Length: 309
Image (cartoon, rainbow, N blue to C red):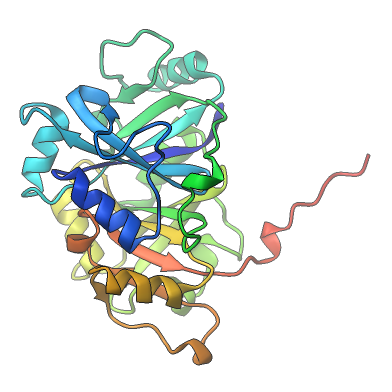
């Protein structure tokens, strides 16, 4: 498999100007004016208009449907106009062979496809998840469009799923990612050290890809917020749960976000009382996306040991 990284997170909204206010004023990001001039944007998939907001090695792509009868338009309507995460795009350095391999393993693609351009996978064959495969372009944003430095990358993208074996088989055997089972991350992390609200017990699986991680949350009770989300939206197996950007200074991000009208969930400890901080923000003020922010330091598994020459 040639999947190199998460290329972008595809979101849908009904108001691009509001998206700019939230992601620029609230998150401290910038619009990549080279690729999607603001405010007019650029033509996107399925009749949408899109803006790109770089974050680390990827970007948030925010799309506004121009036709209510398209799939993005129906998604927006089904979320009562709030929008949210519509899909994630995986970059491939061997597009034709990667897509062919997925088809051989039972994945359907959304036709038509020219064999060269980005292609959407049929969600009904992907546990209900919106996925796109796009050719690796080795593009990195100009520093001018990296924002104010409050967010420096994407720690992980959260998916909620109904069954660990089912989602593990899909991401591992079908998509070709390798689960991280180290004590640094994944299932062996003590429950009280997971970046999750205390009243939301889950089992975590983690699949690194590029410089980020796909984090899977499987509810361990039937009455938690994640369990309710799975029951409502993961009818085929899985649904998008949240994104988690990395902030070197979570307190700075929180102060700036709240001042810009982003609604915080709960509180964080005072700066002088904690070095590792996790903050949560409500979907209703984050374009329909649950937002987690953390500054988790690297552990031993982040050390890359070069083999001897």
